[in-house]
Image (tube, rainbow, N blue to C red; front, side):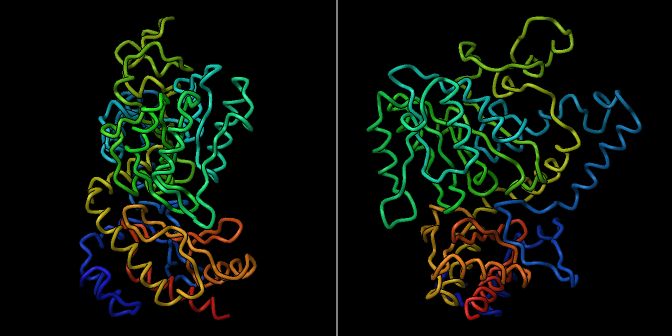
Length: 429
């Protein structure tokens, strides 16, 4: 069945697409939530919290059993020795980040990692101290940068530049991002940009933004919370200075899962970069000599402060096993088609009643589609509530946006069709 041209918002079409899906069996590796009636929910909310891998329970229980069996000896003799737990996560995360293993580290949470990285990469001067973010950035990112500005004595009302789409448009134009960076050259210290904008679902060409920032003399960092595990990334080749992410969305690492960070290898041994250091940043070979001097681990691991929380990191190991089995290239190929099919169903069944905020260019989005219900926010709220009541799990963003994410690891084409059918039904109420 040719992409788009032969599609229809019908059950035969959805069944045919599901039958041809080479990744369909990965759905069985995840626990699909069920409603009060015991039926599986139509879960399109992986952009907020990914589903639990079925083997996550086993991985956590193995760590508990080793703790019970070995006590402190588990640091060296557990099935997955706890001392090198963070290193165990490096290789699969590096594949998803498009990086070398030494350029990534699993640690902390997203906002904590952003603060730690900004200590190193936001080095303002009287002439060059501005920070550029997108207007409507995720609140946590805005809180991070405004607090950093205040910490250094600058007024966010002056030093924070927020780029909004043109009037009447929902997404940002690539040329306007680059033009804004160029216009701020000489004043701009840092660009902090999302890989995928959380509200609209717009995906950005990160290498182009990195090049524009560095041409303007600014550092460039990326928030990849909605990108990693969703779209292919090439952080090393794209020349980003740093990046950070959470692991509980598309990575399916569990609520509050350990986050991650990237630091380009050109900074791996740069001791001139200030940082807030801790014991776990010390090189592994001499860490347990407990000396007073810090010998930094080269690479991203040199930004660690503490040892990783083993029990809350184990589910991420389970999830990354699924990514390794599927492969990001195959997942992206399915994502492009599955997201396009959801768009097809939405437009065929609901097109006169909704506006697609995300845009139809598949290269400028991941698997998230954000829609606005025409009318007013009260109507949109009632539509979202009706979806929820009928077992379709999406999420709501003020004042009038519903976000749907058909995740290629566990969603079916039938899920896309059912969501559109029930949305159409809710719109008729």
